[in-house]
Amino acid sequence: MRWWKAVGLAGAAGVVATGVVVVRAERRRRAYTPEQVREQLHVRFAQATAAQEVETAAAVPEAAAGIRGRLRRLFRR
Image (cartoon, rainbow, N blue to C red; front, top):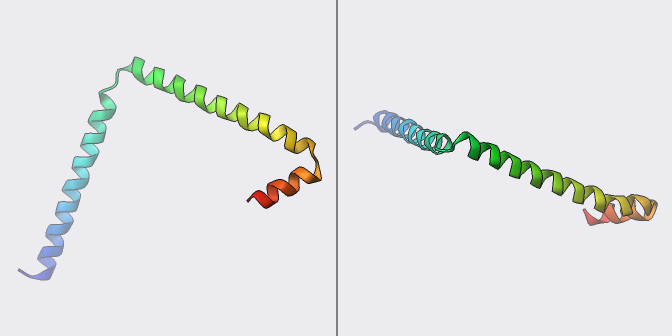
């Protein structure tokens, strides 16, 4: 078998494998009911807003510290 035939067969096998992965992901995605999707989105939104509130609350004391807070943040990185 010539090398270019082997490369062609490997490419075709890669395309088939990618198709299989895409089809499996699509089946998993479609397995959810609309209510389940809506519930999951609400949970993610609640988590994101809670995390954002925690970050905002933590940033307020550092901002009040002035230059000292800025230096701490600079050296933490």
